[in-house]
Amino acid sequence: MHTFNALYDSSKRIIFASDAHPKQISQLKENLASRFMSGMVARIERPPEYATRLLILRRRRRSTMYFPEEALEYIAEKFDDSVRGGERLDVTLTAHARFNDRKIDIAFVKDVLKEFFYGDDKVVKVEEIEGAVLRHFNISRSDLHSSRKAKTVSFRVRYACI
Image (cartoon, rainbow, N blue to C red):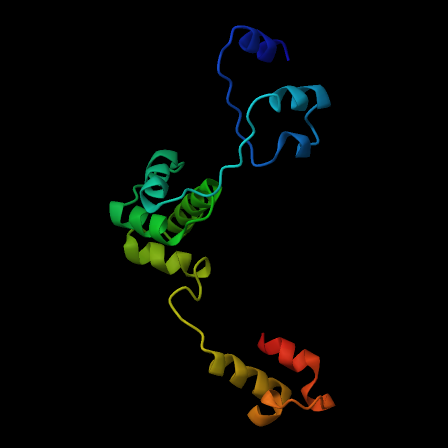
């Protein structure tokens, strides 16, 4: 608190970053949270654009392994979540590369990150969803689209399609 007061009294700029609002941080004393909130509290969403995400990935890399530019560009393009998410990918890729004794290249990145981006490249059609539900519940397409409220086509079956 003394450091904060000294900086504040000297009209210095103070910037704190957190993934939670000061009031939501249970370990933070109430008087300190109150002081932090006396300034501007702003929610910063995910990096807004590709170039910003790429820059953050370049600067925030934690591992010592070499990532080719093409791999960083792929990650920035595909992963538009938080900065922490990008750091998590860095750690994940590095761990996989070291564990498998592999060099990091674009093919390796795509292979490892499939679990993060599953389904991004495939568009699922309504007919495919309906087909899966029809097979699972063993009903006909006409029953599913019927306006009847039969028990065979309950709310649960229709909801599964949604």
